[in-house]
Length: 181
Image 1 (spheres, rainbow, N blue to C red):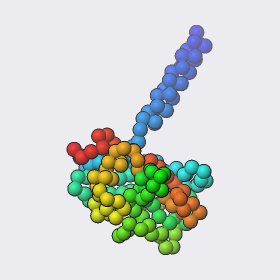
Image 2 (image 1 turned 45 degrees about the vertical axis):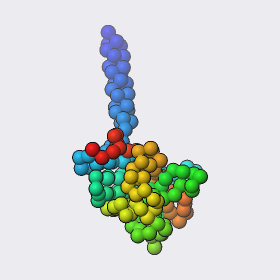
Image 3 (image 1 turned 180 degrees about the horizontal axis):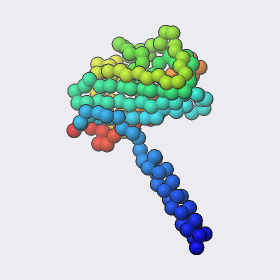
Image 4 (image 1 turned 90 degrees about the vertical axis):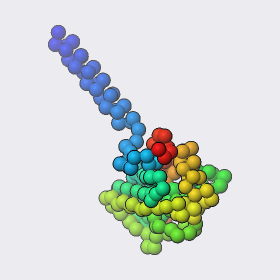
């Protein structure tokens, strides 16, 4: 009888652990945002074939009419961070930037932080942006950006001196319905 109770308790514990694991993978944690805003998030991890001691999270909040907000938080350790962008995932076009996150840009040409920075622990950036900022990078402004976001074609990239093509990356996931309501 004692063996049966022990086996039953063990089975219940395994079932509970499985439920917790499923709950953790149920989707992204969405940031607080104004009602009706478009929200997108990503976890930042080392880019393919890149070793990094860093990781992070990024999100965009686009309330109807703006101003919009980008947020990047990185943890761990990274050396010589030079810039971060939202890129269009289009290899034939060279994965062009669609939004400068840091440094803040006033033209469509990427600019490196000078000097680059190093961190150990955590660092975060919040930046307000508007339709003009989106227009620096491509025609179509906000509407084109939201269409790319809705199609899953945008990713965040954090560049370093050692990895100029990107050390941390993450594909942005737009919260349904991915439109202003």
